[in-house]
Length: 112
Length: 116
Image (cartoon, rainbow over all chains, first blue to last red; front, side, top):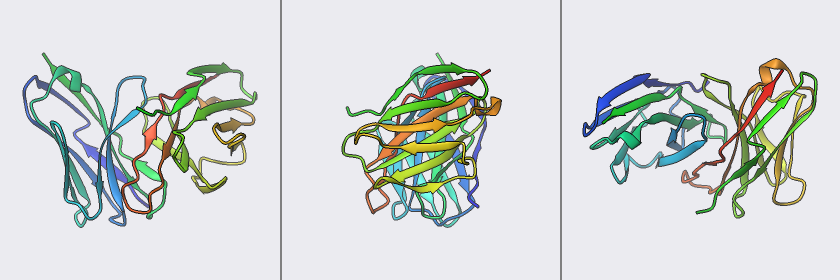
C-alpha cells in the first residue's frame, strides 16, 4: 500500500528565505510525482510534475527533485514571498494506476 | 487557461438525501477523477473514469456513490443517501491521460458538502 508523508507539517519563515519541503513515499513503483499548492478553502493547483525517469524539474523559483529508489522528493522554494503562503502537497500514483495518494501537506507561512 | 469547473460551490443537505455534484472537465482531457478532503484531513481518491467507465475506485467509493458522464461534457458524482461523514470538500480533476508519466492532474475549485 502506498503511503506518503511530508515534513515538516508546518513551517514559518521570514520573507526572502530559501526553504525545502520534504515528501517521502513507501512504494517506488511510480511513474511520476506531483507537487500541488492548496490555498485555504480552495482547490489544488499543480506546481510541478516529475516523471520517474527525471531527477528534477524547475519552474520559476521552484525546483523539485525525485529520488525514486529512496522514496523521496524535495520541493525547494527560492527567495520566498508572502504570496507563497499556502499548503504544499505531494502526490504519487498507487501501483502505477490513476489513483493518486496524497501526503498530508506542509503548511507554509512566509512573513513579510 | 483551460480549467475544471465545479457546481455547486457549497451544498447543505439533510442526512439521507441524494446529492449530485457536477463537474465540467477540460475539453480534451480523457481521464476524470473525484477526490474528497474531509476538513483537516488528507485529500483522498474516490474514483477515476475513462472511456465511459470506472477505471479505478477506492474503498470509500461504495454502493452509495456513482459517477456518470451524461452528455459528453459534464461529469457527475451522485451520493444516494448522504451520511454525516460524507461532509467534505469534493474535488473533480481531469488529465490528458498520456501513456507516459507526464499526466498532470488539473483540479477544480471544489464543492463543499455539508450534511446535517
